[in-house]
Image (tube, rainbow, N blue to C red):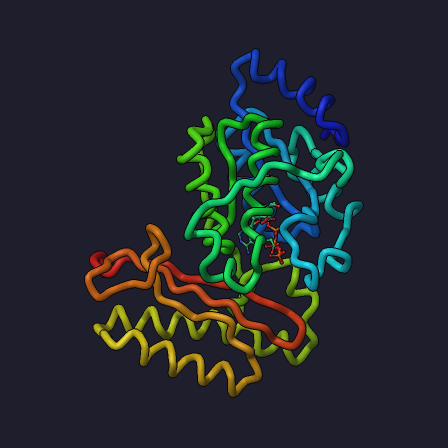
Length: 283
Ligand SMILES: Nc1ncnc2c1ncn2[C@@H]1O[C@H](COP(=O)(O)OP(=O)(O)OP(=O)(O)O)[C@@H](O)[C@H]1O
Ligand SMILES: CC(C)(CO)[C@@H](O)C(=O)[O-]
Ligand code: BAL
């Protein structure tokens, strides 16, 4: 596994692979790698001749009062895990390498970027879009792997790649969970023991709403209100809990078949997100 910090060296290394007709898969991350990330890397390995992973805690996707400074950075362990996966290249740029001067360019995906997480984290998805755009231009992968845990991020990046005719196929990877249902996330490390015990309630609430819809419930608002109450009673501060169309994340009507239920909630100082998606017609 080569470890590369400079954009020029990254390009010089990948260029001959592309010239030789090798298929390149790319997994962008912010590090502190867990089994969710590793699943992305394994899927990448199955799909391509060359696997490139980046670790970059991207400052421009964090709000002023968010956890950029304290975001867990575990470079040594991350490198060992990636080495064991047999990746070809780890790109580890500094902030100065990625942003040598203040950006004059904005990459904004209208609508999708300002709803749900975008409403509580203004500018977050512009920051994600611009860094993913930059990374895609540097790596020029055939396949980009993204996790379904960040469902809105996936939708935003898919829209950007479509709108800008970027020649990369996006492959999404299902959410990897702990045995009790909690979605793996680097931010789970912030949870206290008592919060960790309650955290799986998020996934339970999502599944309860999904199962009720599958069983024929039609009062979506009542379903969400009931589960929100349960979460609030357990100490969650619910940011949003919405039943949406999985195609464009707009609020679902009863006529919509392909649904995603998305939730974001704070437990103490930790903001957790999760989702479940399903099709009514196949049930
Ligand atoms: N549990 C998971 N299952 C599958 N993919 C995941 C999981 N968690 C994260 N990913 C994916 O890994 C990629 C990198 O995500 P990131 O480094 O932000 O990890 P994270 O654990 O989601 O961190 P955070 O706590 O900041 O949300 C993203 O495409 C994300 O969707
Ligand atoms: C896609 C990403 C690596 C961009 O910084 C980040 O948002 C993440 O880790 O999900
Ligand atoms: N996985 C999303 C990155 C973030 O929360 O900033």
